[in-house]
Length: 312
Ligand code: ATP
Image (cartoon, rainbow, N blue to C red; front, top):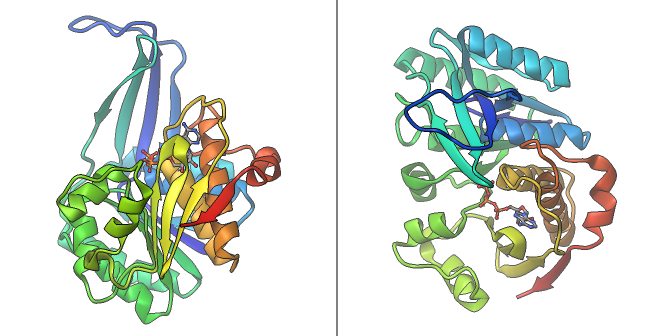
């Protein structure tokens, strides 16, 4: 099975409003609440495409119970480490013709004992895992190299890790002796890592960027480019994955859906071409749905056939 890690899950609350009024009351009729945090988006997509997975991370309080109930309702296997503090909520207000204003709680602060307990819990789960995905930022209280420790633990059991995070956490993972199998930086994250501007429309320059020694030892680097698909390095091969023009309903969570596709393709031992086609298809299918981290499996084959992979 694929083990998906969401250390700071969240109840994602979405409020559609015609107009957001400041310093007064806004009333909403159609509230949508989903099990969120990037790793749970990954989990949902993997599950919808009929792959075995277990979702893990820290969970706490009544909100945590609600979240676990949602996963049970959807049939997503889970094995979270319970903590005392409440799991967080994240609010997205969709207003004024396409604007999105978000209020994101930091979430619980993880106590050192819980940090250690989770590493032990993770270690046990690794015995049943073929592949791990780690997504999102870390909750407060954990050391910067916590993901690095998890990657080393996974490596000790010969389990590879796909890591989708940013900032100091990503940097720390790249500096560690044991590397993730795959990272998925976007343009901004890439620029942050390289400490220089990155032009995502210039593939020749992107190719140079991905050859930077900072990435040595990382097998796959997938730079997703929204409607332009993705530019990818796998060992010493480079690819551009091109996608058709599609009707976008809600692009939020496309990166997570792409990671789900990468995980499934790699897990299934597919060719580079098919791994990338799967990832582009899951990304596209997510943009075509109103819900976040959600795909319509019936459309998979049609869109898979429309992705083209060129060597670069
Ligand atoms: P996120 O903020 O959701 O993590 P990201 O920046 O990591 O996103 P994107 O590059 O925006 O990820 O999107 C990931 C994939 O989703 C793309 O490679 C593509 O397959 C699909 N996708 C995203 N936006 C579009 C779009 N406008 N049209 C077609 N496909 C899209």
